[in-house]
Image (tube, rainbow, N blue to C red; front, side, top):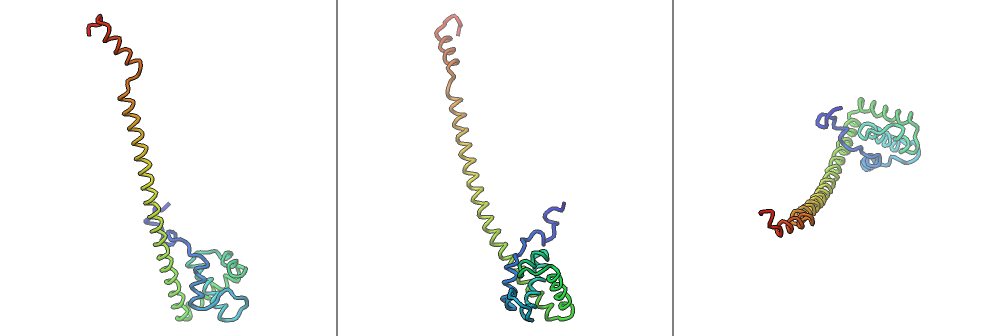
Length: 170
């Protein structure tokens, strides 16, 4: 198993949700989840499906369910169509590249805020753990001191008898 520094970056990032991908594509191109197969909506949906597969790392079955219960073969066709368009049309390639960058940038910004919240939570938890540990140590120290300063009853009787008995020679 690879250690964290050598693991590919795509496995260390969180998965971008289908809703986030859909929102970015819809904001840039227009609606993606409308019914029908009119050209703008169909193309927008195909772009979103392509990004969901390659940027979001979702399976075609899950992508199909998200986009109005499309069957996996329709999702595969959509992805293949965008791949062909990327190779033949530089504008489509530039559009996909730009959308990928935007999704990754937003994901990194979201990850940074999540990491910040996790770090704050971890710091609070560590502080609470330290306070609990300090409390536990204080209790144990008090118990130890109490045991050391208190003389057991048998030792106290032995000390009294030896002090009262001059035959001991002490």
